[in-house]
Image (cartoon, rainbow, N blue to C red; front, side, top):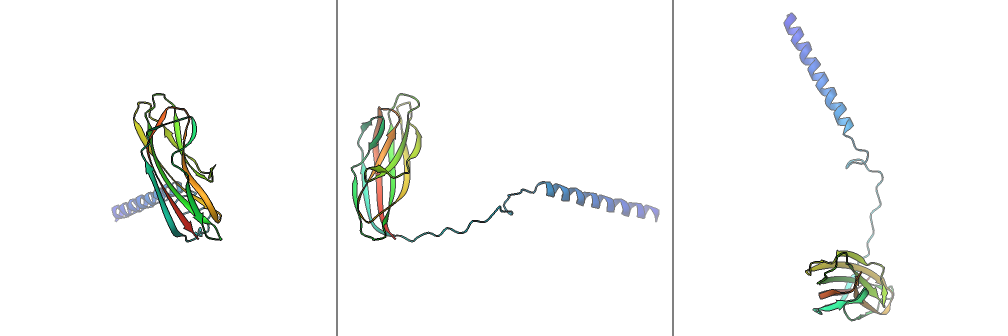
Length: 176
């Protein structure tokens, strides 16, 4: 009987210590902002529904040499917003640049509306210095007022001598 009490006591102590160890360990793994605890929940974003009015597709293979700074890669496209509440232009641009032998030359893609940067140019990265080419992509949404506007894709190059091999621009006109 004494052996049975000793065995039961030993097993009970092992179970108690094992449980306490895992409880303390689990408490130490708690993250203050983990997947189950939130600092605050943001209200849902309310998005306006838009209707596609028209789409303009512009593409080309120019093989032109870009100067340093900003260069239009297509002719400005005229868009007419006939909604009193204004419209949205969705711009999707891709460019293939390269042929550069200097290192550290960077490029980006911008959307211009009415000849002015629409406020959202994206840095694409370095132009390959081994003479090869790289393709960059950019999507942009720009709110415009009612009336006639122009939209154009523009490439920025930090140095001259970069070649623009080809481009593809798609402009969508939406009304609310």
